[in-house]
Length: 98
Image 1 (cartoon, rainbow, N blue to C red):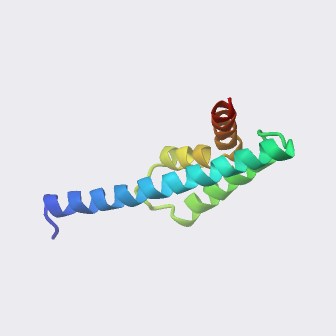
Image 2: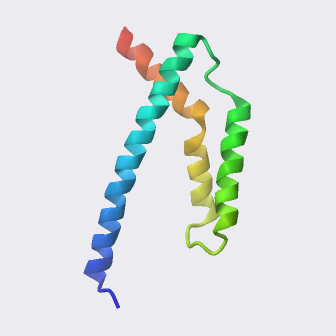
């Protein structure tokens, strides 16, 4: 059986990976926002939001006994929404350009 210190080290390692992945995701989302701005595409796209929400729901359905509560995976769904990310990044790019 693992010790408390070993389990905490595992959590720290996983957290490090999560932060790297979230930063990579943010970088890509900012690029999406930049391209939308250049193309004149609407930042908020309800169909994309629905698609992302459905994708997260499918992930939850494949792991019904996972210890992560559905509220947390709903947060993941919110984070995946291209509209929110692109809106934030579009604002970021606009601010940088001024």
